[in-house]
Length: 263
Length: 309
Image (cartoon, rainbow over all chains, first blue to last red; front, side, top):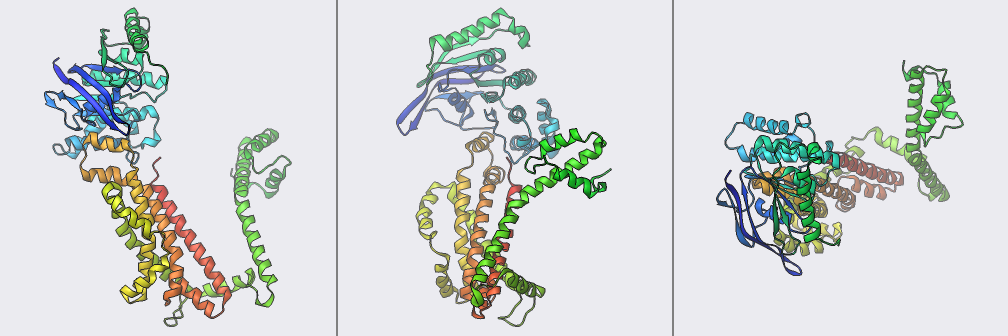
C-alpha cells in the first residue's frame, strides 16, 4: 500500500457577507491506497468542506492536494462522490442515473453493450438489479443511497468520497447499509473518505479515524488507528473490549477535549 | 357473481339504511358487513364496494352540481326581473345554442361563418401567437436564468413592459404590420411571452444545487448538463409558464378580435352585439369559458406527466 491521496497544509477561507471566514487551516493528511478513512467532528467543523476540497468542488485557499501524484484541480470522475441526500436525478431511473455516470467515464472507449454491463454490475453490487427501471421516488431512502453508492463506484474512481451517506436513514437501515458498504469496500478495495458524526459507524468501518477540532479554523486534532481485524462483525464487536476502548477514545476526543456546547 | 346481478331493491335498502352516511363509507361498510351475516360474503363485499364508490362519487359531485343549479337559478331570477328588455334566461339561451350548434361549420362569406369556424380561428390565433412567444421566450428564459448579467440587463425592461395592458400593443402591431391578422398575433405574442420568460428563468435559477453538484462531480458536458439536468429540472416550471401564457392568450384574443374584426369569437361577440342578439353573446361567454377550461385541463394533464416527485 503506497501513499495515494496527499493533503499538504490545506487552508480554506470563504468570503462571506461578514468578511473572511477561515473554515479549515493547516490540514495535513496522507491516505494510502485501499485505506478507509472516517472524518469525524462536531457539526460546523469543516469535515464536509475537507471532503469538497478532495472532490474538487472547492479549491483550497492555500496548500495543495495530490491524488496519485497529480494535483486536484476541479471535480472529476476519478473521485466518486456519494452525497448525504443521495442526489439522484428524479427523472431518470436507477439504471439511468448510474448509466449517466458510466457513459461519462467510459463512453468514448467502450461499446453500448459494455456500458450496459457496467451499469448492471454496479446495480448487482448493491443488490438492486430488481429496481433498475424504478424512479428514485419509487424506492426507499436506503435503496436510493445504495444507488448513489453504485453510481459512485461504477465510475471506478480512485477515491470514494462519502458525505454522511447514512445520516438521513433510520438506525436499522443504516446498520444494514454499513454492512453492505464493508462488503463492497472489501470487494472493490476502494480507497474511501467518509464524513460521519456517528462514532460507532466510524469505528466499525474505518482503518483510521481523523478527528477534527471545532471550527472556525478547524484542523485535524488527532488520528486514531483502528486496528481491529477484518472482516469485522458488528455483533462480535459489541462484546469486544478493544472496540469499546477505541470507541471511548473517539468519544473522549469529542466530548472532553473538544466539547462543543449545543448552539 | 358480479355487482350487476343484485336487484335495485337491495341496493336501495343499504343506501337508505339509517346508519348510511355518505361521507364516511368505510365504517358503514364494516357495520353493514357484520349485520349481513346471512348473505354470502362475496356478494356482500360487492354490494358494499358499489355503495361505497357510489357514496364517494355522490359526495364529490354534490357541491359542484348544487353550485351550478344555484347559478342557473340566479340567472333566471336576474333575467325574469328585467321583464321584456331583460337578459335572456337559461331556457331561451339553451334553445338558441341548440340552433347555433346544429350547423357549426357553415360559411356564408367573410362576415357570416358558423360558430365552429369562429372558435377554430380564435384557437389558431392563440396557438400561433403563443407558439411564437414560446419560440422566443423559452430560450430567452433559459439564458436569463443561466447568466446573471443578462438577467440584470433585461430585468428592468421586463418589469416595465409586463404590466402594460395587452391591447395597448395593438396599435403598434397595426402600424408595423399594416394588417389586422399579424397585429392580433402580435398582441397574443407580446402578452403571453412574459409568463414563459419569467417562469423558465425562475426554473433555471432554482435548479437544486445538488443536481448541479452531480453534474460537476461527473464532469458532464454542457450538452449533457442541459439535456439531463437543466431541462428536466426546469420542465415543471416551464409547464407552469406555458399554462399561464395560454390562459393570458385566451383572455386577450377575445378582446383583440373585437377590435380587429373579421373572424373569431371576439369578432362574433361584437357582431352579435351589433345585431343585438344577446343570447349569442351569453353563449359566446360560455364558449370562451369552456374552451379556456379545456385548454387549462389539457395542459395540467401534460404537466402531470413531468411531475417526478
